[in-house]
Image (cartoon, rainbow, N blue to C red; front, side, top):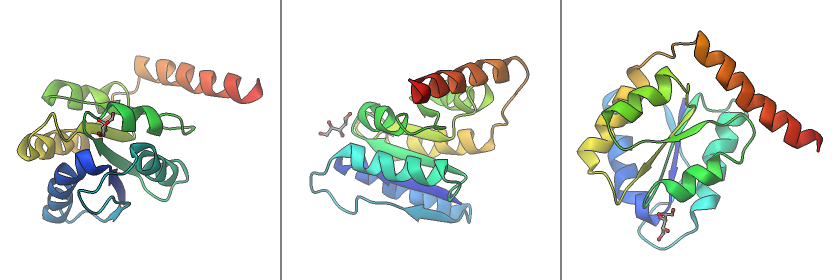
Length: 149
Ligand code: RB5
């Protein structure tokens, strides 16, 4: 099960990514937004991130105009590694090295075709583990330190 959400700037690309989910017969939950009216990206980044962190979704996709704001918001939720990607290489590395559990993209940056291609790469790529796990553990340790403070 995947979770997806966007603001108005990412709405069109979100529709394209949902098409991809449907083509691949992937179950998903759509947290909105559901049209072009102006909304606030943190609300949608938080919904997707909380669903992933709670285990209600295996992973998620978040989209705003640039992908910047909604990735910052998603990364505030403990356990989330949201990666903002722009091309095939960053989409591949987001999984291979960072094991990103949320992919973030910019609806005003990428065409629907490119966005679909990048989500496909991220879904199809395997996390490499090994030396990268130590680094992910260090990211988790930062979160733990913050919680204790
Ligand atoms: C909304 O206009 C825009 O600021 C938002 O979609 C996003 O790009 C923020 O990072």
